[in-house]
Amino acid sequence: MHTTPNTLTEWLAHCEQIHPQSIAMGLERVQEVARRMELRFDCPVITVAGTNGKGSTCAMLEAVALQSGYRPGVYTSPHLVHFEERCRIHGEIALADDFLPHFAAVEAARLQGEEVLLTYFEFTTLAILRMLSLARLDVAILEVGLGGRLDATNVIDTDCAIITSVDIDHAAILGNDRETIGREKAGIMRAGRPVVVSDPVPPQSVLDHAQAIGAELWRFGRDFNFDGDKQQWGWAGRGRRYAGLAYPALRGANQLMNASGVLAAFEAIRDRLPVTAQAVRTGLAMVELPGRFQIVPGQPTLVLDVAHNPHSVAALTANLDAMGYFPTTHAVFGAMADKDLAPMLAKVGPLIDRWYFTDLPTPRAETAASLQAKWNAVQMVAGGQRQVSTSLHANPEAALQAAVAAAEPADRIVVFGSFYTVGGVLQHGIPRLGAKHLEA
Image (cartoon, rainbow, N blue to C red; front, side, top):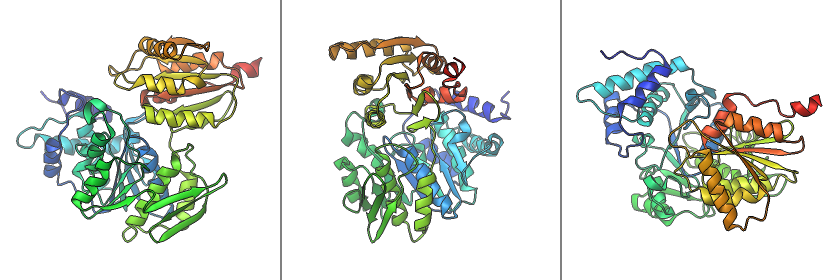
């Protein structure tokens, strides 16, 4: 006898059982269930695709919308600690019980007539889309999970697409070159609607698709641009300028590109969602997003970053380099097995003095022992001149505790890699940094 789940935890367990695969490409099943649910939005929808920068872009869109007095809704994935983080309404994370009627509605639609098998991601996406569609929003901001063309979020027609940086990730599914991946990302565009491309060197496939379907292309460097010095930055787009802006509260070298795309998107749909210059200033200055080059106050310095592909690790490396001198840098690292790990380790390697490799609680993850072996291979290629210590840990929490125990107050600890790595550290609370030194 099939019993209906009563809690969010039970529903999530149910969603994991329905489809034999965790990722099944194709939109037909999601479209069919969305049709049965009569899913539609009565407000402008902004859809954000890209390899890196999606979460930051969504957070900045939300922050500026909130400061303009709007009621935004955000769908984002994956989550760091709790599933509820995937849905924010008017700046607040949704409560577990708020999801229940929407999971029930997806289940009813899925079983209406011929049963439709949905993956965990498809089922949960439809539930959150329904929740947002009924939340009386002024704007819906949707982060694409994987690719774009075949992602479950693409059942909703966007009013403005944003494509952030395009790089190689999920190569087994999306393709192993930027042009092929770009074609997948370009699938979120709609004819006659704006598409903002904030990648300064976008794949030709993205530009070609915009032209082929007649989307209104906003291209970085042509239709909008930014400039800045150490104190402030400015943005110029079609017919509008912002000068003397404070840097976005999100740290890192790529955030001005993301912020520029956000301002272009607001300019592109200005007739439907006008924002004030003051809202732009305040929103960008106040935006928050855990796990994106997040520096936790205290000693030793702690940096959290979900960099998990070569492109984002290169950005993390540049950001770490810009922080100045630390006697020793400790790195807690765990990642998925399908990632291009060697270039990531080679890039950040010169900055790291001690590695704490960790297992992660998912079968997709690389083991700590395998990460150590890959690091040793990278070291051999580089000539192995530097003395770098490594250790293996069962989970991110244990790895961080070991790093904290070994670190001196003036040192730096970097926790990076998968969402499971950073989330695992945040989930258990950060151990009191520097406590052993304070007691001494």
